[in-house]
Structure formats: structure tokens, C-alpha cells
Length: 226
Image (cartoon, rainbow, N blue to C red; front, side, top):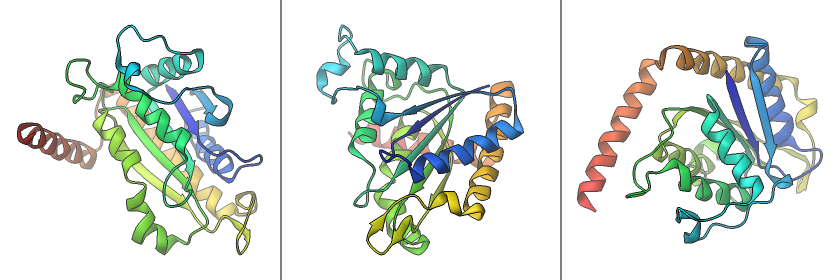
């Protein structure tokens, strides 16, 4: 079983990276033989998306080629990101845009090519949980929706809020919140079980199958309208 984790946090040390490590710890505890690759996007050179990146003869830079290979070969995808000004960092949005080059069909760019790959999303931010549920869950919804469009299966999202050392002062705090890290670890264990089942049987829990069917129906209706 192979898991790819993409971390969009830019700070060192990073709350987002700490949260991701707790999630990956849960995966490893459930399946010690799992192969995990983690990329911190701040360390990668990936040029900004242009229409040339859809051209079949477009030459990709090395870091994007590495990313593409890992996404295609992954059995499960983990995205860990801070929330900046109600959305995700630009370099993560750029990666999602660039993924369209190989995650969508070449003819119409409307059919996802990820084969139901399970995906999970981890978020950190300075806001409280109620604000996340009431607003920012929707302002960041483009991220999981893009992965659904690419054919992946969104398994879940987890938000760790109030990542501030004091009012208006951001910094590392999650390393001192064992409850939050245990919760993230438990999420990782559950995600690993779903990915493992999917790699063996290509079957997902019924609720995810149902969501996928509904999404596919909506896609077909929209395609006819357009």
C-alpha cells in the first residue's frame, strides 16, 4: 500500500506538518509496511499553470514529473494545508491546476482519470471550529471538489483551529495539543483501513459509493447542459 502526502505549510516548524505527521503515524500504526512519500510543496519547483501544460508535447520540470509519478502510483492521497485568508496557499492551488494535465482525459478535459483513489484533507488555521464549520469549510471546498472532478474519492476532512500562540500571533502550537494529535492519528488509522480495503477489493464503504454515484450523475447533467 502506497500513500502520498502533500504538505502546503511553509513555516518551520509547521502546525500543518505536525498535524500531517500525526495522521501518518496513524496510518503506520495500522499498517507498518505501508510506503509513505511526503512532499513539502515549499521545497519543490513547480512553475505556474498555463495552457501549455495541457499540450501533449509540453516538457515538465523535474519536480512536477516526480509529483505526477507519485500521484499516479499512490493508493491514497493526503493533502495537508493551512488556511490563509479563507483559502489554501497559492502553491497548492497551482498543484491542483497542474494535476489536470494527467488527471483529466486529453480529449475533453472533463473526465477524471484517478481511479477512485481515496483522498483525505487536513487543515490548520487561526479560526475556531464553529467558524470552520460555518464558513471556511465552504471557502476551501474547491480543493476536495477538484479531486472529485479528477475521479478521486473524498474520504474526509479534519480541521485543527486556533493555531495561534496569542491573539494575532501565529506559531507552532499543535505539538502541545495531544488531544488534537490523537484525533488526527485516529483519522489516519481509519483512512488507512479504507485505502487497504480499496487496494485489495476496489470496494469502498457504501456511503462513499453513493456519494460517487450522485456526483457522476451531476457531472453528466452538467455536461449535457454545457
